[in-house]
Structures are given as C-alpha cells and as structure tokens.
Image (cartoon, rainbow, N blue to C red):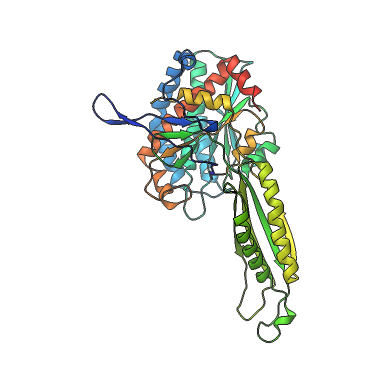
Length: 423
C-alpha cells in the first residue's frame, strides 16, 4: 500500500547509439527538486570498484530474481498468511550464503537474513514485503519489493566480501504491510535495533523511467461499532434503536466534513453488518474507516473531528458506540541525505515503513513501472503489470541505485554521519 503526498514522478527519454529509445531515471527529491540523472563529482569518486561490483552482481542475479518474483506473484497471500513467500524467500537467501532466521521474533511469516564480513562494521538493512491484496493479488507489487530487497542484500554483501570491507547486511522479510502494520510490530519487538540505516523501494503507476523520494501519507485505521435494539420495522418501529441509522448518519456527517478538510487529507470507509432484514430494525452495524494526512500531527487533529461525527450519530439514534483505533502508520520521513545520494546514484500511498523512518535513518523511494491506462496501485491492471519483463527490468535498475546507496552508508563515514544527523 503506497499513498504519496504528491506525484513525484518524471520521465525522460533519449536515443542510444543504435537509435533505440532508452530511459534516464529522474528522481524527485524532497522539497520538489528534480535530481540529475548523472552522478555528481562526489558520487563518482565513491569507490568505483565497489559500484562496479554491485552493478555486476545485480546483473548476474537478474534471471534468478525474475524467477523468484514470478513465484511470489503467482502465489498471492494476504497479510499474515505469507507462508509460501516466507518459505521460498528464506530458502533463496540460505542458498546464497546468508544466515537465516525463519519466523523471526515469533511472527510466523516474518524472517531475517544476515551476512557479516569481518567485525566492527556498520549494519545496513533492506526489506522485502510479501503480502498481496484480497481478491486482486499483487496489485501493489510486493513481489517486486521482495526481489529488490533480496537483490540489494546479496549484491552488497558480495561486494563487501570481495573488497574485504567490514560490514553487516540484514534483510528483513516483513509481513502484513497491507493494513495490519507488520513493521510496527517488528519495531516494537526490536527487529530494527541492530540497523544503522534501512532502505527499500516501492513500485507505482506513472510515467516510465521515473522515481521519487517524496513523503507518504500518515495513516490511521478505525473500527466503530454501533449497538441498538431490534424491533419489528412495521409493527413497532418506535421500540427499536437502529444501529444502521447510526452508521448511515455517521457516514453522511463524514461526507459533509470532507468539504471542510484540506485537499491533502483523506477520510474514507465502509459499513458492514450481518443478519439484516428489511422488516427488522438492525441492532448492530460496524464501520471501518481510514484517515490519512501528510503528517501524523495532522492525522491526530483530523481524528478528533472524525470521532465527533460518530459520537453525534450515536447520540441521535440512542445507540451505544464502541470506538477502536488500530495501530497507525506514520508519514515517511525520507532522510534528506540519503535521498540526495540516491538521486546522485541514479544512472540513465501510506506504508507502515513510515514507522521505521521515525526510528533510524531510512529511505523509501517510489518508482514507476509500465502499466495500462487506469492501472495504478491496488488495481487488477497493476497486478498484471507487476509480472511483466518491463517491470522487472526497471526494478533491477532501481535495486542497483538502492544498493549503491546502502554500500556507501557502510563505507563512507562522513556520509553515515550526515545521514544520522538528520532527524
């Protein structure tokens, strides 16, 4: 699930020596600045031998990663049920020399894979998301997120070993991104404490050959239940307390509220119930709503206004209300230093990762894969696009950029210090 605060995407095309169209990746930095596709002088002097090793390793892994991506794509599993993905990805990492911990920290479908070179080096983390969406499969491209994490971890680990650089690379398999805040649960369990920084990338629909390092919306999920009293809808309706009316009034109040909230705020939801009949006053209704805003502070303010709508509906219908707030997703705080270097390294929705960015230096760029018109995230067309060769090719290029940024964190003391100084 990816909710961006603004469209970060930009494309550029030119021709190669053979007259074929090629892409240059343009990265939108925080604050709306467009990054150049060429490496800066500082970037070009950063260990070209390491950069070359990472790029070569990623290319050598590409066919394996393509096969791995399709396995995950063709076996979609919803949040907390990613058993096939767990077993497939842990086996892959074990086969590539990583120390693998399945069912990490007591979560059945979480896992950790680590590779250490020497002692005393820094630790960089990558992430592989796995869960699909109910009914439409990998319509958020988590099969691609999974292989980007895998590719980055293996390529960086091999480069560190080849060049004898003390470092640790950790890849986390993170379940339940789609609505259940899996990463927040891993944070609470200490899953990120060993990392000095954490990186991942997310596909989206948009112009080709583009990526973005903008923020994402903070997110709060709510469950509201109304309890009333049944009665015969024709014989004695005055004896009933209509829970469905309460839910409907709340829905209408929130629809009116939208006129007075900011364009960057989102409030949306559904009404659920069971055993309803047209001749019976419903005594129960459940509402599931989501609040989004550019920052967590704005979500908290909006939450107070939303709650009043539900309370007013309960008062008007004389129903009892139960209010439940699920764990929220913070907005993504892109580390400006990392975003800048990712831009320099470029050659040619809401997410629970936001909670990670509040814990340690982090980067979560989005990038575009080719889709059909109307094929944005969380659509069947996007699920189809996530399995294409074209989407894979773009993902490999993004993985190279992300891996180079991660390697620099491990090697460049000044770069790591700069990234750590930005809160």
